[in-house]
Structure formats: C-alpha cells, structure tokens
Length: 113
Image 1 (cartoon, rainbow, N blue to C red):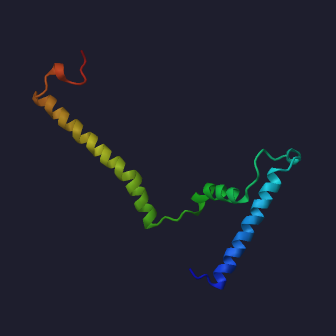
Image 2: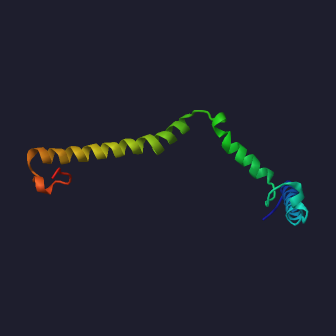
C-alpha cells in the first residue's frame, strides 16, 4: 500500500493529537489535588460536552424534509395505524360471530355471569 505525502502528514498529525489528548487525560486523572478544583470524580471531556449540547439543542435546528417525514411516518404513524386496523378487524369478526350465534354464550371470552 502506497501512502502519499499528504496522507502521511495527516496520519502524523492525527497521531500527535491522539498522544496530546492521552497525555492530558493521564495528567488530569492522576492529579492528586484534583478534589481542590471542585470538579467531580471524572475528567471533563469537551467533546462529550459538545455532543450532549448538540443532542439537547437538536430540535432547534431540525428542518422538516421528506426523509424526516418518511422516517416519522414509517416508524410511528404506520405501525400504529396497522395495529389499530388489525384490532378493529379482529374485534369486528369476533362480534359478527357473537351476533350470528356461531359462538355459544358459555364459550365467549367476556361475559357478565
């Protein structure tokens, strides 16, 4: 596999950044005077904080698109509508059998006696 100069430079910068972040984490996590800073027991991760802030404010940046509409339709509306139709058709079929006398009263699932 041949690596170009640009790819090699990118890999080197990424490795340096990884080492820098690792060393910073080790430095903060092994600091014996950390309790004096008022922080909790975990190291503050700015990337995680940005991700959580993005998740909270996601609705403010939502754009209604066709893809979002289809996702909502197929994930929420359609399953509920299909389930309601199945329940209705099954109950109508059962009610028709009760009304025509095909099911004796003693064999019905719900009775008053």
